[in-house]
Every structure is written in structure tokens, then in C-alpha cells.
Amino acid sequence: MNDITRSDAQQPWSRAEFEAQLRAMGKGYHIHHPFNVRMNAGLCSPAQIRGWIANRFYYQFIIPKKDAAILSNCDDRETRRLWIARILDHDGYGDYQGDAEGGMEAWTRLGEAAGIPRAELWSLQHVVPAVRFACDAYVDFARRSPWQEAVCSSLTEMFAPQIHKDRLAGWPEHYPWVEADGLTYFRTRIPLAQRDVEHGLSVTLDWFKTREQQERALDILKFKLDILWAMLDAIEKAYPE
Ligand code: AHQ
Image 1 (cartoon, rainbow, N blue to C red):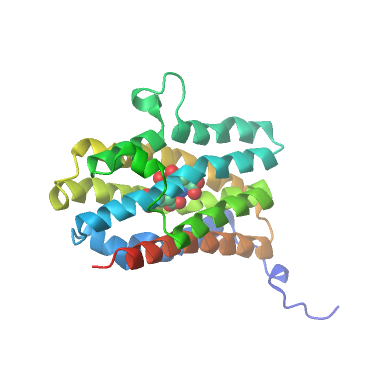
Image 2 (cartoon, rainbow, N blue to C red; image 1 turned 135 degrees about the vertical axis):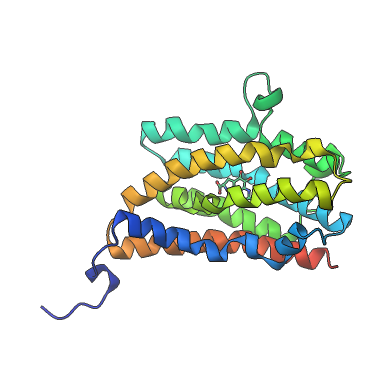
């Protein structure tokens, strides 16, 4: 037999090594984007903070549609029973009050705390084209990909707890004009992100078996890291210093 050099002829990574490879992708996470670095250092103007809030709202706005797309492609009831929580986390449930209000409501309060009225935020009038395109690319990927690949793309949240903790630690000092109630979203997202990553990582480590499939998982994660990075590129350009 000829000497096959394709990556699938290589031994697959162990489960631990595969996870380590996924986590090593964190070097490309948008926590390292110059705009985020400046925001964490307290160097953003009110206009830049408001621009970021209004544009990132569109990402929150499409997450339920992205997660519904994954559900619609998923034939495994156990997975759907867990995944549906992600939609409720963002859209809310029950009486839609307090913890049940949903992340989009909490993000709306972040906007109001920064001086963006609810109607203005929800009008999406501030969403710049490249942010819309990046977010819509995420929804499209979830619609047309095997549900396990779309689950893998959500693993950028492996790196999210730290970025939320940075905001909770830094904003009260750097942006005291943003009312403290507005930071609720960042606080509530941390345990949810940790729960979601535990499930998403389990699905990913189980599904991508051969070395070629594991490398495909890294490509999928890179695609999603680029979505987050491109959003900050566009926001940075739209709201120059
Ligand atoms: O607030 C965020 C959120 O609800 C989600 C869902 C998850 C997904 O399904 O892709 N990713 C994600 C993220 C949220 N916040 C981002 C941030 O920087 O505040 C981080 C982002 C992610 O890391 O994917």
C-alpha cells in the first residue's frame, strides 16, 4: 500500500490532547483584540462603549436563532433536552422576571444603564454591516452544518468566563457612568457559560474521532473565533478613538 500522508493516516489525539488542542486556540480569542484590550484598560469613550453594546446586542439577538437551528438539525432527544436551555437562557421563561428574564433582557438593561433606550437598541439601527454579516454567518453555519459541528463552534465560550470577569472587575472603576445594574448580564453568563461548555466539549470530544476529524474541529473553532474577532474589527473601525 502506498505511504498515505493524509492527516487521517496519523494517530488521533487522545481525548486529553484533543481538548488541549482546542483550548490552545484561546490565543486567538477576542479577549486579545486591541479593542477589547483598550476597553478593559478603561480607554474607551462613552460612544465606543455604547457602540460596542449596541453591536454586540445583535450577537445576543441571533444566539437563540442559532441554537434553534442546532435543535432543528438534532435527532438526539437527550441533546435537545439539554440544548433547549440555551434558548430559554436568552429569551427568558416562566414569568420573565428576575433570573427568568433572559439574557436579551439583561443586555437591554446594560444598554439602558449606558444610556441606550430599549427601543433604540432593539431597532438594530447601530449594527454595522460587518457585525451583521459575521453574526448572520454564524446562524447560517448552524443551519447548514451537522449539529455536532455547530455544537463545536460554540466552544469559544471555553474562554468567555475570563472576559466576563474582566468586565465585572474593571467597568465599575473605568466606566462608573454605566449603572451597576447593567453589569448583571456578565455576572449571570459566567455559570451558564461553564455549564454550556461542559456539554459542548463532551459532544465535541465524542464526535470528532479521527485525526482528520479532530483537525476539522479546530478549523470550526477558528471560524467562530474569526467571527468574534471580525466583529471587534468592525466596531473598532465604526467607533474610532
Ligand atoms: O454572551 C455570550 C453568549 O451568550 C454566548 C453563547 C455562545 C455560543 O453559543 O456561541 N458564545 C457566547 C458568547 C457570549 N459572550 C461573548 C463575550 O465576549 O461577551 C463571548 C461569546 C463566546 O465566547 O462565544
